[in-house]
Image 1: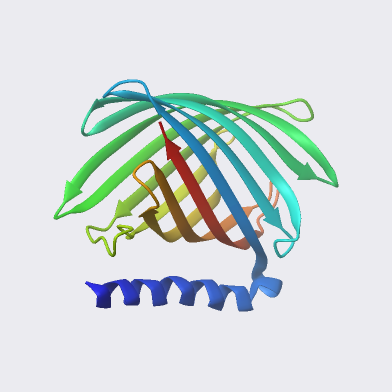
Image 2: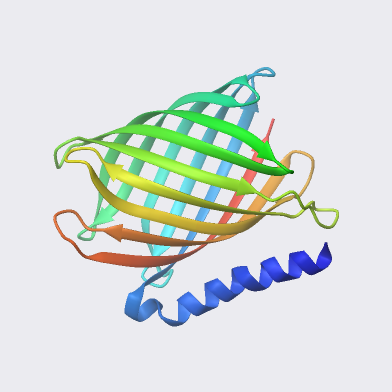
Length: 221
């Protein structure tokens, strides 16, 4: 098992450094950090508060932040339903612009030979005060591997998420990521991941890449 862990780590950081070398030509190197506080209401439902900060321009400039409150209900072990609201501040032309995005989602979950799969389907209504409101669909497929290593229970995972702009049906973003989740304490979990974000600017046919080193911290109550 330790051999598999080293192979996964080498692949993960190999991707990171290989893309970083070409970041100036093909895309920006960014650092994202997400902090989540999760409150369990009962066996089937929970509320989560989330804050995320993103630093671009080779991780030198804060360009994005969001604040999110969400509710999840587990109908059974194979189906989760949820809804929430996200307030976003994103830098555009040197000024932070606001976006307000209520959303709903349905997640399908299943397991094959210890591999845990999740297929999340999310619909967002994106409201602005500086441009026309839009709808967006997001589909994320993630897989947690069945292996856990060390006392921290380090567990590798991969995921891919597509973003579809529904005002005209236009695929405009893809996020491919690989990472490691781990337990810091019984109620505190962390993640470190690499994400390749490929996005198309509105009104163009040009795709650009961003190479992201991300961290996540979740506290459960």
